[in-house]
Image 1 (cartoon, rainbow, N blue to C red):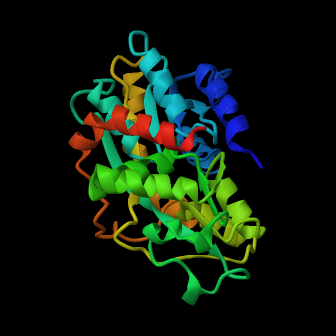
Image 2: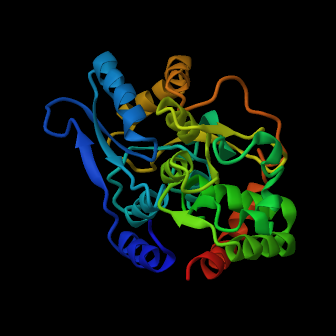
Length: 311
């Protein structure tokens, strides 16, 4: 278990030196495209290999770290903006893509797109908690009966950050701050990522978790005694995004991959392995936050999250 103090040190190291690694076909001859992606390697690899077989274009791939999901890649793209190394950014959430777009990192015309979706969910261990006794909403998680029983990823990164920031936009800053402080005071288990949340709930080390639908599906495949609670107005949909880096070294190859990742066949494969959910996005209150307002407030909100959750 990673406590708050060790986590703080580890996150500082990760942000200073992103532990990212390059995989793929860099040693092969022929056309290439360089991809930075936060999509889980187990899902992305097969799709990118299929793209190579179909087009003859080799993929060089940089995956992210679970602990600093997406943020490490976003920071790298910002650092490389004057000398891009990446051709295409495949992100499995929306916030950091929109943030980078606001900094003009992508092609100005048809530079990025959304496809498919996952959802943010509350997951419970059914051996520890009956459905009838489960919390009805995120706000219920601040009740004293759930003290020390909730697992969650650190809310500065990945989909957890996106969800918390969308809640701020939906609830307003005062109500959101009160909830964040009450949640932190209830001693949640704060861990490296959403997959770790599911492991803790599945093993019974936590009764409740905040995580993503694909991680819950992975836990169910492992026969963990877990179930996702129904979607509520506090839930949010998390689409995949794909973006073309402005000034990239291989723009034509990147455009081919950009189009390929948006094909129905790719979405169907990601649904088959539960990396995406079936059907159309649910019509939820938080599905479409005011992104302009959210991005303007991003630095302020991130500072508030650090102050509350990073101790």
